[in-house]
Each structure stands twice: as C-alpha cells, then as structure tokens.
Amino acid sequence: MVIAHGYRSGFDPQRFQSFCKAPGLELRQLKNQRSDDMDLYYRPGSPPCRAVVLLIKTLGLDVNYILKTHAMSEPDKQEFLKINPQHCIPTLNDKGFILWESRAIMGYLVDQHADDDALYPKDIKKRALINQRMYFDISTLYQRLQDTYVSCIIGDHHSYKLQI
Image (cartoon, rainbow, N blue to C red; front, side, top):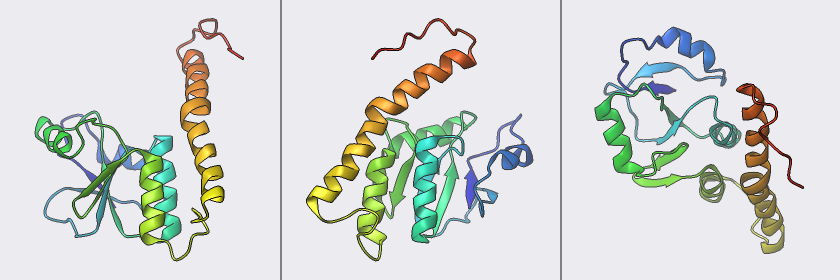
C-alpha cells in the first residue's frame, strides 16, 4: 500500500499511480490508516527501492509503502528527517527500528524474516561472495552506469570518459 504524504497542489495521485507499476500497490493518503507493520519510505523509479520491494514481495511481508517525493510538504519533510537525517531512500521503519541503505535493509529483512538462509546464507564464505557482488554493484557498477546514462540523457555525450 502506498501512502502519499500530504498531497500538494500540482500533485495528481491518479497520474502518479500510473507511474507506480509495482503490482499490488495502491495509493492512499496518510490519515489514520497506518498499521503496526513495517513502513518502507521509497520512490518507485529508484533501483535500490525496487530491489527492496522485490525482496519484500519474495518474503511475503506486509509493509506500508510510504511514497517519498520531492513534492512532500514541509511538515512531512521534517518528520522524515527525524527518522532519517540523511534524507535518503529507501528507509525502513520496523516498529521503531530505523534502517536505510537498500543492501543493509535487504540483509536485515532476510535475517529477520526469511524461513531459511537460501537468499542470504549463514555460511561465512557464501555470504562473503554475495556481499562482494552487492558492494561491487554499489561502489562500481551503479556509479559507472549512472555516469554513462546521465550524460546521454542530458545530451552531453562527450563529457564522460570511460576509465578502465
């Protein structure tokens, strides 16, 4: 379930809902409809958020998806800054336990809620290989992809020099 913090003028929930392509997500306002389950602050187009959402679906967890947009009202921004001073997404609130950074969230969710260790093995060497690949993604691959595609999107095809 998606919660949009305080609709501001110019925010069209139906238009935004069409952008939210995650199956089973519905848009709702934040008005006394919260459950005691986990809250995930996220944005649908964010790859790190999508990874966490996919894991949540895989684990079959009941989570409140709280949509964090640039159009958040000032009180909602201040509320979010209280739980996450870095103001980044995704951010998980598991009954008062606050965690951000997608890979940390995914490791926590598997350790806390998975029936077995198939997704994130307890064996130190197997887990080390998974961690190696996750950290390669965040430290090397993701940044290079972003550098390459952002320059293409803004039309500056010559500004990025491939470093090998």
